[in-house]
Amino acid sequence: MTKKPTKKPILNGGAPKNFIVLVVILVAAIAGMTLLTDYARQTQSLKYSKFLNLVEKDQIKSVFVSGQDLFGELKDGVTRFETTIPQSDSRLWPMLEKHSIEYGFTNPSSQFSWWHLILLLGLILTPLTLWYMFKQSRGSGGGGGGNIFNMGKSRAKMFMPSTIKDNFNSVAGAVEAKEELKDFIDFLKSPEKYKRLGAKITRGVLLVGEPGNGKTLLARAVAGEAQCPFFSISGSDFIEVFVGVGASRVRDLFAQARKHAPSIVFIDEIDAVGRHRGSGLGGGNDEREQTLNQLLTELDGFETTHESIIVMAATNRPDVLDKALYRPGRFDRRVEVPYPDLKSREAILKVHSRSVSISKDVDLGKIARGTPGFTGADLANLINEAAISASKKNQKDVTLEDFEGARDKVTVGKELKTVMLTEEDRKISAYHEAGHALMHLMNPKDLDPLHKVSIIPRGRALGVTHTLPEREKYNKTQNEMVATIESLLGGRAAEELVFESVTTGAYSDFKHATEVARQMVCYYGMTQSLGKVVYLPTDRGDSYSPRTAEKIDKEIKAILDKCYSKTQKVLNDNRDKLDLLAEKLLEKETLYSAEIYELLNIEPRQDFKFN
Image (cartoon, rainbow, N blue to C red; front, side, top):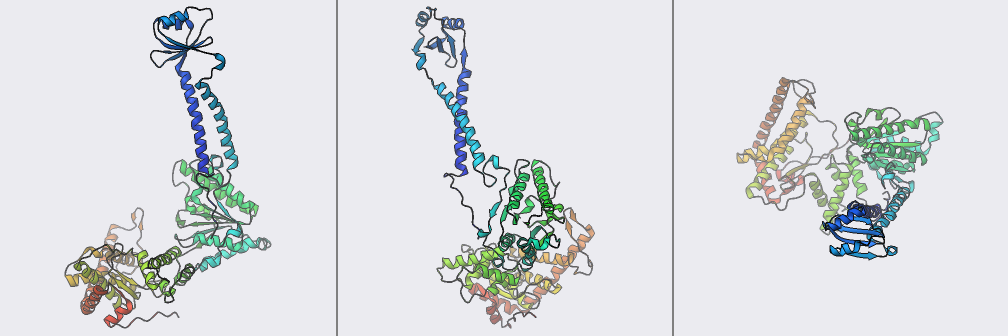
């Protein structure tokens, strides 16, 4: 586990508090200057003769005298004025009394009005604000996003070797990927070994794989094995609204990496910044392209500076990356991080179960067999869900039942305890799942072994039939694909045979069966009439003629019709087994393979043996 930097509390010295203080100062200064400006705008400077004329016209409301300065307000209640009184004029006071104008006096030496206070505050707050902004620009440093002055700084997190706890022992499976990455570890540890013979080690590594398969973990493990500084950043952290910021961050990132060489730079989700150039218009796209150009320039710089720096990047979308990234000298080593195979899944389950108390009767190898297509993250989640289930029941250990429930929850959905099915719905569901299961048992050589059948509603399904693959399969025969279709159609065929009517519950079965038949026709050349040709759809539509599309549709329908006819015949010939299995499902709701073999008096399937 890497040590995460401590976050500052929002109102205890962190950036949000600094921002609030700055806003308060700016608002106070702006408010003061605005009030002073408004007052100045509303105060008119009058000649003394014009003032006397207004007095004669009885338009003055009140006046205030300070030495020879006279300030007043008109009767409209809005306009204020100021003027200067001549010392020799003795007419003023009788005129004011004659027109009933209020007037007052003050000593000029003691005058300090509220607008003077506002002016003083503005003069103090303005330089204070400028000083505060300057201090923040110099002092907040670290990272790239502290404030506007640090926007061009890299946002990468730097991990020193002492804080990196991951190594290749932390990564279960991914044997081939680890083998390829050992070259880079050796280079970081002993770069002189390669320089001695003039060898140029690849500096760029692109980790390609689906989310959850361990690309980031592999990158950290390389840094842990090489015991060198590790800079981690996401591709989206380079992109900003302001043009040029991303390129500046790239320069700063590689400057830091060179300073701490030998080191590793890891860019996660590089497709955020490395997409094909020229794929869009506008400022945002220009900023991304400038950032990509700078990244390519930095990668080229390794050929002249010879620093011991490895750049690793991860993506699950290699198809959208710019071709310039693949040029020799850049990311010319591509490491695939695939879905874990059977042995890898078992190893991953063992790694994630180290801190979990698991019952002795739990076979992790069997659980690994039942989780084909699971990523490392999915398997970690499976362990966690099983542990949560056991904790809710106050159990001492995690049992096989907890793992079964966790797998069903992950693959199908949570058990729907509030769904109240009628007896007729339960009977239809039981026969539907019994049809699937029986067709599985009738094709033992071409399908994976049956594991369990359940009519407990989960997710969007009212029942489910699980298989337990005995090994990894890298090829499928035509017989296997046909048997898969027959098993998928077994649910509908059982409904039609028993109830002489059909329901909507077979939609997903038909969808999957149609897809398998389409693959047989369009991808694998398993038909005579269309030959050994691949028919692929494109973004602009099908790549074949309407006449060929019609032939494809006819072939798909012919395969499905033939499979359905055979399925109906098999179920009709084994009606007693179908009824027996459905009745037992209605009684127990869930049946495992051993119970089904015994119930139907069928010889259990032997475990697969590797040669």
